[in-house]
Length: 109
Image 1 (cartoon, rainbow, N blue to C red):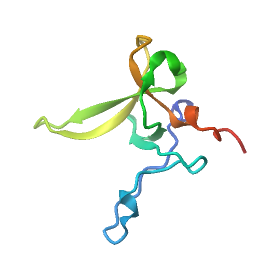
Image 2: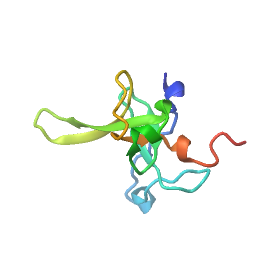
Image 3: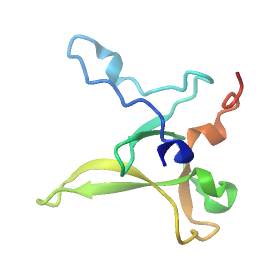
């Protein structure tokens, strides 16, 4: 399921207090663009683009939404990426595209 969804990104490394590089936003190793590395709802990680687009501009396999997970005290503790499935969003509804859709180098060897 993760491969079909494109959720094959490596998780971000644990922050090292002696190395400030973890503060920097992640970049695509292929094209150098900024990306969002987000955990999915099924314990995998996915590389997402940093912008939202209308659903009509994003092919169905690349549509994601970011959902906030509240803890029992109603404080947002984390954000997870959820694939848009089942009911199609309205054409103008914002979705977050997978970075592999936006990357000019994805699929090139």
